[in-house]
Image: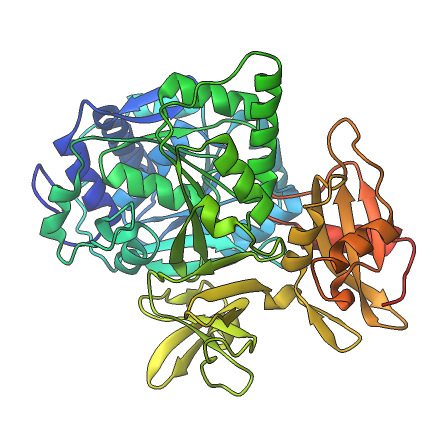
Length: 548
């Protein structure tokens, strides 16, 4: 049953939340635009929503789609569903009708929570064959009326660490897939194990959790939508520690982010790669040049996760915010957080501009396995695939074939093939090269797009870019760059110039052989690459070729 000013009996998300809400009811828990919630307010509203959903028939193991942009109702819905032992399903709020229909069907969702601007898309798919979807609840008047009519006490539900948590992922390179976790495993692997700063002090027993509610709460800002793991996991981490979470509304607005940092006295923030960090830093510089600097004096930590942040990007962050502690995170929806690396200016001095990131302090068992099946010898230069062990998901929801292919047995233990390719340096650090699924085989040589992208971003005429392989009669697959120039112009870019720029930093065969310049590189709301779009653009419009 839900906790009552005690300690949770298991590592169950709802039980942990209720313990924290009882311990610090008057603290501010959540800020989203004009919406503000204390722990007590968030708890009461989640209880009311849980009762309403139960009245609609939602119970243990039922899935409910959250087709929402960032809003307080998103967090309320997650907590309410956890309380019922039901499962919130994260849905990309940019999905059009066909994509939404696929995800609701694949996830077996019995209902949808959405917002007025998105309701027409939901209505468009309800007329199709989705017999499981029994209700739609829209934020605003209907939502508030439902909460007002529901009880405020806690639902009488027995919970456990075996209750499930699902995170849909992978829509940028293929159909989205639901990563199916036990909550106890996700608590340790995704949500820090009671150690949100990941300082190596994860709890061992549920009765230790109360001691992890901090006496000095920080204010945390994830610059990503809650439908993305990077925002959802870190939000739960901070709420479970009694801290304050600030979420941004709408599309990325760099000026609004910096104003929020100042107004809420944000202590730590997380971005998702160069696609988020670069516009933030551009706006910072613009304001400085205009004599209207932003106040980031409260900011102590700046972290990156979910997409690569280039060496140039990291150097710029540290030059702009010299007093912050910067960290780089490595992980995935399937592996959770695999590692984190603290970054200093000294670490970056002289580093290769194409080097993505390296980790010497893994948060869980992580190995690199070469083509021969053996672990890669440090310093050998052999490229292998990254495998993660320890606590892992149950598999992919509704996809047993992919589960069998991705979660394998090795030496009597279960391991995850992450899809990342890496080598191991002489000191034992894992050096990431890119995703194996996106690797380009050009003339018999393997090229990782992320490595080429990192090199291209150091050119003053490249603001953002994606690199893909396109069919080519000579090379089999040719390296193609889809490039966005800096806002307001910047230097012209040509294929020959960008190829020469890359060859100064990478082996010649990795340089782009085709180029398309676009007004804007398309990414997910969180900043993750959309390689399907990039390949379509490259195949349709790539021009020019050069010899290797």
